[in-house]
Amino acid sequence: MKFGRGDVSSSSGTPENLHLTPEDSAALDSAHVGDIIGAFGTVRVDEPRSSRSKGLRRLFTLLAIMGPGLVVMVGDNDAGGVATYAQAGQNYGPHLLWTLLLLIPVLYVNQEMVVRLGAVTGVGHARLIFSRFGKFWGAFSVIDLFILNALTIVTEFIGVDQAFRYFGLPSYVGIPVAAVLLFLFASGGSFRRWERWMYLLIAFNLAVIPMAIFVHPNYASVVRDTVVPAFPGGINASLLLLIIAIVGTTVAPWQLFFQQSNVIDKRITPKWIPYERIDTAVGVVLTEIGAAALLVVPAYALSHTHAFGNFTSALGTAISLRTHAGSVIGDLFALVLLDASLIGASAVTLSTTYALGDVFNIRHSLHWSPRRAPAFYLFYAALLLVSAVVVLIPNSPLGLITTGVQALAGILLPSATVFLVLLSNDKAVLGPWVNSTARNVVSGLIVWVLVLLSVALTVATIFPHLTGVELIDGLSIGMVVGVLGGLFIIVRWRSKRSSELDTLLLQRHDKDGLTKLRETWRMPKLDKLPQAEMSIGKKLGLGTLRAYLVLAFVVVIVKIVQLAMGH
Image (cartoon, rainbow, N blue to C red; front, side):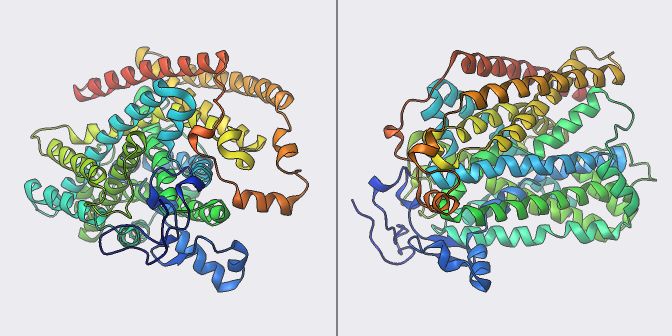
């Protein structure tokens, strides 16, 4: 079967203008091959990057390609993010702003790796894990993702419900309306239409910036709290739970799966990776500015009121802001919560359905209409329906569920990042796009810090009488162990790393040739790849990590239950 030329899409919802045959690409869905169809323009599949290298033409190309990075990053400040940042500001003032600064490189490094994986392979994250690590590890990762994403979608509808209730709209009206709108956003059979809806929601999300200005923060204090780490009240299990929740809501596993699949769905190929990197970097900056604003607003607007230190939910924060800072601030906060919930629900639900489409090898693209890809949209609708129904259950501890989901995301993130790093070092998968030594050092540090945070939470929960000094000492020892272990791994890795890629493909000093090679290199079909190496050490390491994560998962659940019971 050949894909013919023609319009961007036909009236029947069948993607056209596809120039490659199935033999030319590893893509599992024919809609993933063809012109880049963006909210603000189209880039032809056969157009050389050099033709877009000057002036306004380069800007227009960037605008056409941008989208996956912006959506995944702004979607990161979803309902759970709004609630978590609001809790940090309302309970601890601006003193946890430093966590957001530290997360900037984490966000970019992680998402840049999935950009390369998506553009080079044409295959989603879930499918790559199954292919390179086997059914056991693939199933483990996808089940983790499905459970966590399903719970996260519930938190998005919690945000929708709270925003509507703030304005006096009953739950049984607001939640069904939101669910229908979310389905209509995605089911038009047009990637461009869905992306334009996302851009509209992203534009409104910028209301967090004037909202932060309206509360008249102390800018000198904000800068100090951003660059100087502080642990208000000392380190304890509750504070660590919140810090890990901030990590979990800012760097969530669903983001890895979503952006890789969305890059593929937008048909971004290796020669356009520099533009997608800019898209991701802009998204990182916007999401961290938004997160800081959401933390600053309750920190300063409620600092001298009885509401300070008494966070209950995002709805409670909105009501407190209306009471103590005026209806404009309260209304804006509620509208931002609604907007963030809709962005997050769309992105997280798509992340799940993209992954399921990858695993079951069914059509999974926004370029298809529901008639052309019924299973894809059925999964999408089912996730929205079940999540909406869960939120309508009376007397659910909605605020606690939101915080708990973000903490669980922080616990599960190290394993997702481990697979990401392993795939980014797989020469059969990425060829000349594999990680450099510098990227591996940074990503290894990220994984270790995430593991240490989860270990600290686990220990503080099991041994609640440990002092803050003892916990800090333990974290310090862990960092020393990590640095020494990292140095050993780097030395061993560099001594064993062959120059096969350089000799078989291109010498490193030939930068122009390497650039041209990277622009055209694509991963072969999965069944053409050599079998992935799974050494005993790698299997033991992954097995140990998984065993620990299961333990940490259980401990966090116990802690959340204790908080729910008032202990």
